[in-house]
Amino acid sequence: MSTVQHTVTHLVVHRLHKAADTPARVDLREAECAPDAAAVRLVERLNAHYASRTGKGFGRFEEDEERFPLARWLREWRLERATDFLELSRRIAAQVGAIADEEELEEGGFIMLALVREGPTDCLWLTVIGETVGTAVSGGLDLLDCPHLDLAALRGAGRIDLEGWQRGEDRYLGFLRGRGSSGAWFKRLLGCSDVIVALQETKKLVQTLGRFVDEQQLEPAARDAMLERAHTHLDALGESGTPVVFEELAREVCPDQPAPLHALLKAEETRIASGFVPNRRAIRPLVRFSASAEQWKLEFDRSGLHSGAVHYDPATDRLVLSGVPDYLKRMLAEED
Image (cartoon, rainbow, N blue to C red):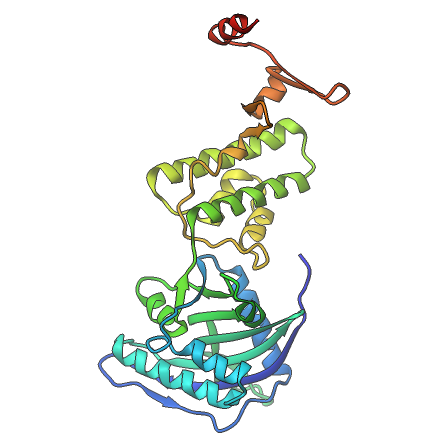
């Protein structure tokens, strides 16, 4: 997987104070943070953490900009140039405070808004991060408490592909799904309408699995066995109505070495949403070939190519089927 260069062009951090049964208070920064090495390191760590996490959702902005104003604020900043980045961050921080009260959140954190150039794409990152206290050693070898941002205490993270948003794509907004109700308030902050259609996501998953096994350069039998394991697992999930979990799928498909497949499935560029129930019809290509022409339609299991039940001769461009059932023989004989 190629490394993407990140260039931080704008970054602002505000602070949300919130505890149980107390009103929220937001400390606003007076100016943008310097896009220095510390800012780049934070963005790199955030990006790596976001990429490593499962449970991401994808979508687009809700159409109701009165209830979900982030899209309007972005338009006024990015397209109309009516506000600057600092004002955009302050509007968002105030919205975080309002939602924290309405949702009765029990924890505060640091609200970070960053405009980051990721390769050829401008992305806007919006995160709420908690802090923890670590231990540092001074020049005199004294131990000191050292508060720092803790990505393990990430309250929420959203990534907006600004070019995709301007082009009107369906899935330009990605976010980490929090546990329990913690993800709902952040999704509300983003104003995100999920675009997770099980059929579409299942088709992308099947294509990705096919690409993965092709890249492994396996023997045909081993390749088909891997796809068969994927089909068995996904079919069971579809039958029970259970959402797919990429880590579990990778262990089922590649029990000896699941890490490469897991990395591919959760990679940002793969763009497969997690948390959907597999469509059982859409996973058939994992174990079956299906094709049609003007005068015929055919479907058969991949295993038939290895058992001899199906044989393709590229020299004559003929497909030979063996073990024709009696009822089909009679039907064909009647046509002679």
